[in-house]
Amino acid sequence: MRAALGSTRPLVVRTALVADPGDLLTRLPAAAPHAWIRHGEGLVAWGEAARVSVPPGPGRFDWARDWLSSVFAGAHVDDEAHAPGSGPVAFGSFTFDPASPGSVLVVPRTVLARRDGRAWLTTIGEGRLDEITAPRDPGRISYGDGSLTAPEWEHAVAQAARRIRSGRLEKAVLARDLTAVAEHPIDVRVLLSRLAGRFPECYTFSCAGLVGATPELLVRRTGETVESLVLAGTTPRGTGPADDAARGAALFASAKDRREHACAIDSVRRTLAPLCAELKIPEEPELLVLPNVQHLASPVTGHLSAGLSVLDVVAALHPTAAVGGTPTRTALQVIRELEGMDRAGYAGPVGWIDSRGDGEWGIALRCAQIEGAHARLFAGCGIMGDSDPAAELAEAQAKFRVMQYALEG
Ligand SMILES: C=C(O[C@H]1C=CC=C(C(=O)O)[C@@H]1O)C(=O)O
Image 1 (tube, rainbow, N blue to C red):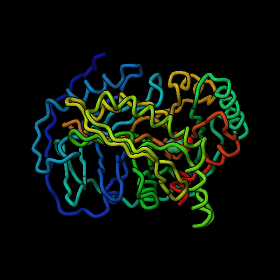
Image 2 (cartoon, helix red, strand yellow):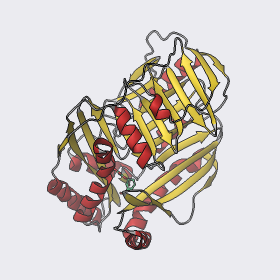
Image 3 (cartoon, rainbow, N blue to C red):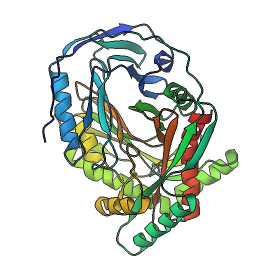
Image 4 (cartoon, protein in one colour):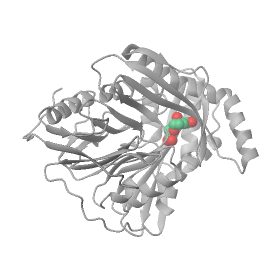
């Protein structure tokens, strides 16, 4: 499928090195802020030089690639930084389900970035530093159930586990949503600052109203190097250091969680192996300890075959078994049938790409879709044949806490 391009005029892009701008998030204006931040580094962006809604369908990543090449190829670029994320970039969010509408690419008019101690400002056309108003707290938050109540979701988990035991599939990731209404319109900048402050290890992101702090790196491409952080297998944090250590050890020793993790690793290995000349996957996972949960985590690195952009790798990897299941097709059918909701951007790829094809994309977890004073929060869990519905519900609640904290402080 080829992208319908409309009348795209060539972009005039200038990237200039700038003095350290301090906390990048404090530079964002209120309107439609974009962000990708970890440990204070990354990109914040605003304004729109180009934007496209990617049509749903199996060819959506090809369509997006065509659109991006036409926008980037014609650009006049003056780039002082020559680094991943300098020159023109696009932020993007793709829905979990290829059949769902809502995938979007945005080429911001202004991008402020920091990486390895250097900072730069990219402007397109008449880019400008917009007036920064003080972020406003969203005030009181009221929550409601999304598509399923907690008991209904536990029932869905039990059904999925039964199907797994009957041999139809090995793993399925089931999610649920919560609705939230704030007293005042939600200023995304408030959420971003809280998330980046509390979850520095995660990728705090904002793209077209999808906001969160995901610990899961789907893929980073820097030249020929690709990296991914595969997560699956979770336990909530304990009541203190001893309890935490005991829970971490139990997670590491849990056959259920280790199999759940192995499914996620296998799906990434199967996809990346043909794309990479060299692929390193550790034999054993490590523990990733976050303020709300602990995960089994495997950092993967590879040497990418020539000619593939980060978006090509995203297209190949999505959906991994960390958010879909094993085998993928059967798991997706079970998800559609049992969740009773459209995941929208949740569990889909979110991130950025530059005109060299470098970029960073996460799996949109621990996130919410924000619109005015409304938010839709998502959390899911890998279900295996021996999953306990009550334990999975507790795990989903621990995952919801990320966005509840972002909203409430
Ligand atoms: C699906 C989610 O988490 C995934 C990533 C890490 C651990 C997971 C788990 O242990 O179930 C999930 O596979 C979510 O946070 O909504």
